[in-house]
Length: 235
Image (cartoon, rainbow, N blue to C red):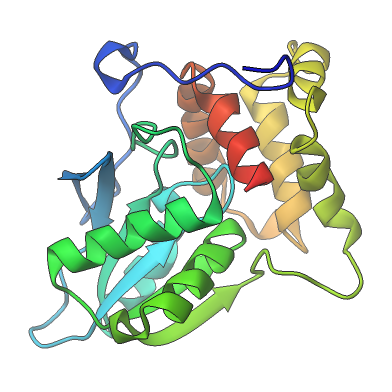
């Protein structure tokens, strides 16, 4: 391994105990074992029988919790599920340490094949937008519709807000950033993310902000937090 590479994430069997993941009222959380990966899936029981299935895929550093509010709004329209990509949310790192777009797309495909829910209404945000686009390209039979929210796809003019993510993928930058921000609180980190992602951060509810801080505190205790972030950014 070169000096520019991050150390491999520890095996899921030796990961430390951290706080439990928040589950909103009306939601369910379950773990799904698949070849090479274990995925955590968040769902809401459909309001009625016969609704078409939908699957939501979060962005870099996010989790299935990012979709809780939308899932509640759409529970009468679709049968909602949201997945934690490997190494994010409550899903442990993949066995092979592969966080490329192809690997994340493969994880989504494995889940859809195993659950036999396809074709689904597929939603993707940021990194999840790139992942779901790849899923739709290689397995169109699994996709009913594709909805992209600020997808991380190539642009003719690179947005300034994309620069921090690009820098994260540069060897050595993650270690430097970790040292420089060692004193930052989870609240400060969440406010930074909100200003990056929201046109108007004031639209976020106090409860939503508290939930995000709680999740950030939990994630920062995981030894593979920065590994998953950096390798996914490089992917």
